Length: 290
Image (tube, rainbow, N blue to C red; front, top):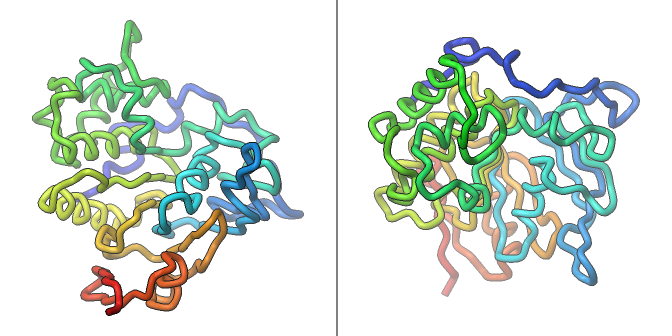
């Protein structure tokens, strides 16, 4: 699947929110897409993230794994400028959370998640689900969109095999079809960072394998933005992803090159279970040791 590239049918200059001036996280301009230093999130007596250090550079494709309650979705909320850290510094696309208007930053970040999908009006058409990302909203209502926006939305749907569904209500789609529409929507503003929160959740075997193939193709495209994908399952890691982070209890168990992280020792520590891990042509799987 070829990515709908910058300049094909979309002018990044037409994003309607003006981008703020760069803010340095350190003494020189930040070169990383993401740079988190000592980031913690505390809600009441519960610590959701605990002193997380993490860097994501341009061209990297990260997978984040860990058990329920490990802090994966909270970390993605920080990375998507949807949440501020309680402590620490979060640098996102040369901006620093707390020193930038998040409504100027969010159009530069593509996000696909179950919580965002739940905000889509029941009868919204597939085309409108994608095109409304131009304004950062989830319902078309009475807004008028230019032909350039509509053409880009159509081309993205076509790239993800959903153009023939463009006039269907989003609510009538299968789970796999909805996931592909959500990813097309996340790419609508030509983002510099793409965040995918459990994109294969709820899919049957055929739907999962189709999505993984498409995500692997997206990862291989040099024009694709930096990608961060959250999942619970090794089987859902697309071939071609370059880095991995394992989390547990709000902290980082291991992070780095995917071949160094997705190994039995680190995965067993993250899930608190002795595991036997296999890797066949970039497809990982794990079973409990007997």
